[in-house]
Amino acid sequence: MSQNTFTRTLPALLLLLLTGLSPLFPGTRCDSAEIAPFQTANQSPLIQIYGLPAAERSILLPAGKTAGMVTVDIASNFASSTAGNEEILLDGESYRTTLVFRHGFSERIEGGVDIPFIGHGGGTFDSFIEGWHDFFGLPEGGREDAPRDRLLYSYSKGGNEVLRMDDSEFGLGDIRFSGGIQLYNDQTPNPRALALRGSLKLPTGSHRRLHGSGSTDLALWLTGSDDYALPLGHCTLFGAAGGMILTDGDVLRDRQENVAGFGSLGFGWAPAEWLALKVQTSGHTAFYTGSELNELGSTAVQLLMGGTLYFPGNISLDMGVSEDIAVDTSSDVALHLALRKVF
Image (cartoon, rainbow, N blue to C red):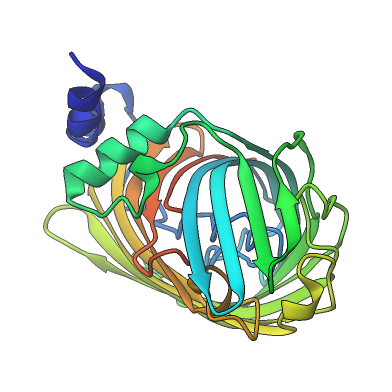
């Protein structure tokens, strides 16, 4: 099988794999499995450095319970634009592995910490991404003419290059502390819930290697969900909306915004005891001001598709793929995995 044929058929193979795994997941009830938003956000190299949070769950952990999660995001970036006296090139892959911990301190209070490790590289997924775009009839945006497996993030203003990164090491990102308050939970078999969440991101990562922004970011948001019983399984509507305040950082300081808004809306369906399928849109306002470039000055919107596998022992695995439906405002394509265990 040629590489092009393989990338054309990969989405179908993944679907067949998911729907053929039911014998491996005995003893898990889909009518009690929570369908939650994807634990990920915009992975663009100039956005993921800020404290943009995922929507997270609207049902907090019970008192005394702890959840541990490992998330992996692999994002392929390619954008090349010129507007006015500005020029930008984002060509490379970013890798983000985050250790996520949440603990229920009472029936209504939850706290936690996210510890990310971030790297950038030339990547190995260029052929896969071109096949993905070809399969869905999406534009390549010049990717097919660019050098393969290149790492180069560059931004110029008035002919002066003010940002350039063409090599990177894997390292600690900006650590984020979070908390949540349960505002409402009817605790029915198909619950309706609302939570107020907040996070504080500290500048612990290197801004020179785009592991962090150099800013301290405070975010506050509402996240809600509504679950419905169906003749086959159950479904959940979920969404979130909030805002951020950012101190001045060290990446494109003269362009950085100090206030941003964000939100998401999604739907999940669990047709079997071991599987939920999910679709989610996420977006945010621009993190940079005074720029005509989509990569910096436009509102970002991305679409995430995938699902959750439920294992016995309160273990779940999220798998998803995101696409920048507002072109050039987020990563071209990002792969997301999240393994979660509740203790």
